[in-house]
Amino acid sequence: MEWLTEGLIDSARMLPFLFVAFLCMEALEHYSGSRVNRILKKTEKGGPVVGAVLGCIPQCGFSVMAADLYAGGIISLGTLMAVFLATSDEALLIMLANPGNSGEILSLVGVKLVIAIVSGYALDLIFKRRKKMENSMEEICSHCGCHDHHGIIRSALNHTVRIFLYILILTCALAFIMDAVGIQELSRMLLGDTIFQPLIAGVIGLIPNCAASVALTELYLGGAISFASVVSGLCTGAGVGLLVLFRINHSPKENLKILGLLYGIGALSGMVLQLF
Image (cartoon, rainbow, N blue to C red; front, side):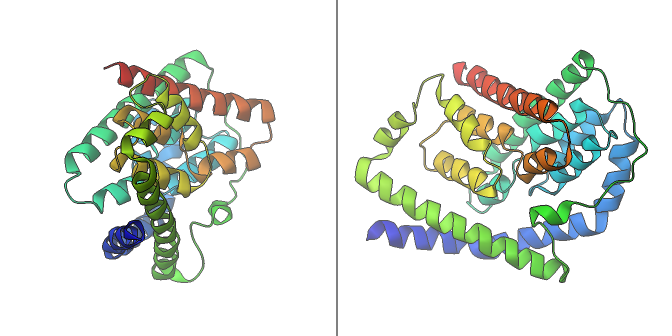
């Protein structure tokens, strides 16, 4: 049962850091959410840059906000995609909770920023900007479960407990698999060292739940997938923002186009990185 002990110890070590990090994120979203909303509405030419920077902030709050603004015709497709591609959900917090990953975090954020900004401007050049609408925007962040009405401490605790359980289950499962089949065999099963592994990671990232980003991060930290693959998976992983887009944007054809673009850009970026 060494795999269970190892998983418990590794997960428990992250717990205090995760709570502090989630508390900071909740405070940022709670006290700066309306200001960020106004910035995204007013931004035109700089939309993809602003969207990419905001998307780098952990959790799915900004991807949900971007989906809401896009459905209302306030921001462009390029800005929406920049937010989605830059979003890493809980991945950065998990990497920060593991010592010695500062260099990898900077590389991950830097690569995702470049992909998000370049893709955002390219899409705005290819596709016409949506005509602005005067509809009032509905506050929909409550649909994703990111906030409740009990204050930021309660929300931070909820996030911490949920992510801790994900980490505990996935860490124990990964430790068991590594003990049973070995890291090399697990990597081979996931098409390790091939150009096709980012395609699998991209599909995992599309799962509209923070469990996807947790799984991808744990696989990467465990050595089962490559840096290119985790970039691919985290680029396609827009968190609950993608689910919210399908719920409030009333054009299924347009939503499927965005889904296809998101997967295509994320998978292609991962495959290019894998070549190098």
